[in-house]
View 1: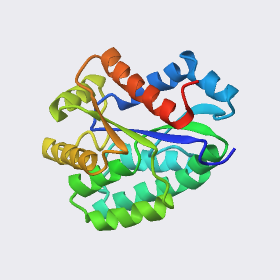
View 2 (view 1 turned 45 degrees about the vertical axis):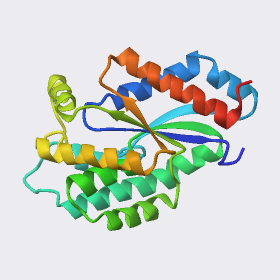
View 3 (view 1 turned 180 degrees about the vertical axis):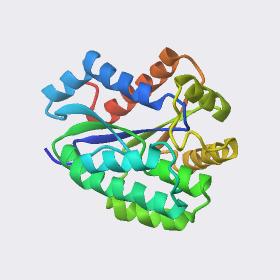
Length: 227
């Protein structure tokens, strides 16, 4: 196996868009639909695995608690927040993503570089060129083969997070912050149409899953062939 046989699919979107749920559904569907068995039989893939940022490694889990835990008396400064996300990503890429891609894994990842651009760039107002440079350092040039952007109205998404009960530090930010984040995702999708595919996330869970399955089927056929 070589790294090109594995594929890297990222799920992105604002808070409450359903990306975590849809990632889990996609992993189950890839297994139960027969896609995984087919691609294993042809020698293309070894497994379908799920991961997330921050928190996809043991070190990352500790960073995630700092970044998304409940606010403390000491405020996390914006640049410190950015660097913590970059540190988590650097560990994730070298310690998890590249090794699994090299083995021929299909990786489903909950957030990646676009989130940093949207949240820390558009949301926090940090320099986009600096973020691009940090992303390049952290990833060593590893980009997703496909990014699924679950596009949902910000107010709807935040209402969903409130219904869940306890909200993390990012979810507690004000509406204007989340609207800037959504603007970031929108502009990224326009700038990278070959990598980022928009999913209308306003429908039911099943309707959103059907959209994603159609896109995944199309891409898997492009990457590996249909038979």
